[in-house]
Amino acid sequence: MKEYYTEIPQISAKKATKKARPRLMAVVNDNCTGCEACVDFCPVDCIDHPSDADPRGHVIPQIRIRWHECIGCQICARVCEGLAWNAIDMIPIEEFEATYGVQITNEKSPPEAAAEASSA
Image (cartoon, rainbow, N blue to C red; front, side, top):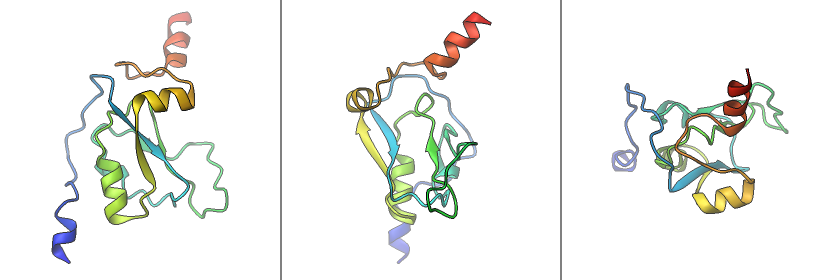
């Protein structure tokens, strides 16, 4: 049983920041129970619960991954697969952009926030 947990990354005390456009994007699927097993493992701290979350029958609302901060490291997906419900899918960045209609850049802030900040 001990070998099962050796592939799960250890929690890092150091938080990184986004430096480049990722090749993959983490996307939460319907298996998510909101257990937060993945939250502490994210090296850029981009996983949380939305403040206006609708639990949709879940006791705890599903987590969200802030796409503009995600670095595509796959750690959350590996942790979820090993410890929880396999509720995070990693999809190619081009597929993510086409599906969700957003442009992923090297910037940490979403385009809407950048536009709001420049107009203020």
